Image (spheres, rainbow, N blue to C red):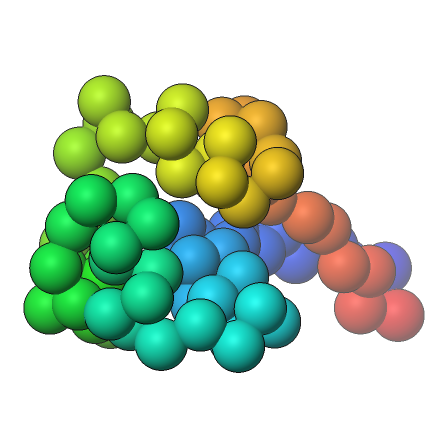
Length: 77
């Protein structure tokens, strides 16, 4: 039996949260004080939010900062 570890990126989490809450790039950016372009770049994994923003993002997204670095394992059997 083999196990694979997957990393859920910050980009994945931001995009999922924004889509689940029906927020546009602009609306989400306004919530956290950045431009729609910044959010788009995060979601495309072109760059990441500044680490200083993670607590604020976590508060808005109702998660912990640790959740941004989550990984999970899948058994391939």
